[in-house]
Image 1 (spheres, rainbow, N blue to C red):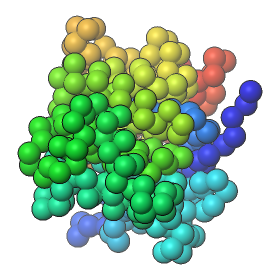
Image 2: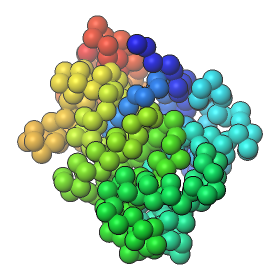
Image 3: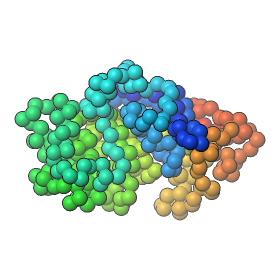
Image 4: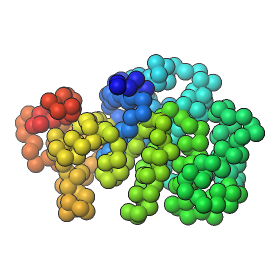
Length: 311
């Protein structure tokens, strides 16, 4: 059975205005997501992953110059008025931000912050808001949800804060969850638990997981690999990870501890976002004169798309 389209991004470009001119963050992103589909967006720090997630929700501030189209259920996000935009963020799309400890208001108890979000979503009666908050804290693995409900954020460990943040973000039962680096700074066991929780609570929603963690990306159906503001490979997770078409994707996989921690030579930097030709060529061992021309994202014969003239 085919799934209906939920999110469509076309030609999305984001630049930031600075005193030294514009810095290109993402450039010409095309992306689609269906109902109940999970997509991981992977890449090194600075490639534009988080900017893309925030741009989808129209959360970037005024120094961002945004071009292109973001459509959610045929609604153009960048044409919405304030009321429609708040309804989108408060009920249809939910963000699990980075740094859970700093994402909560430090002077308000956890339970009240979850209640406030549920109330704004307007999906349950006022008399049921508290029980809904406690339900999601329980689903998040807290054996004593009342105790967490009455706690201030500073009383929770980093892992507990992450679980409480996921519970809060998913308590409004959104249609799309954007999880930004949900496993950042966690050990292997905590990472496994958080990923299991995230997929369990988002079981009836679509999800975009923004991550540099290949192990986390493995839990999603599809993967989009970003480099210097562009998608350079996209396809089913098993195909991308087992048969990478781009040298950069292979480098990310080989850099894992389980693969010997072989680093990609060189470093990613903002200058490559404006480079002519292939933006990875300075770090690529297979670079040739052909790489001086900017490669398109083209389809292969196995459901993948790759931006490389050598693929």
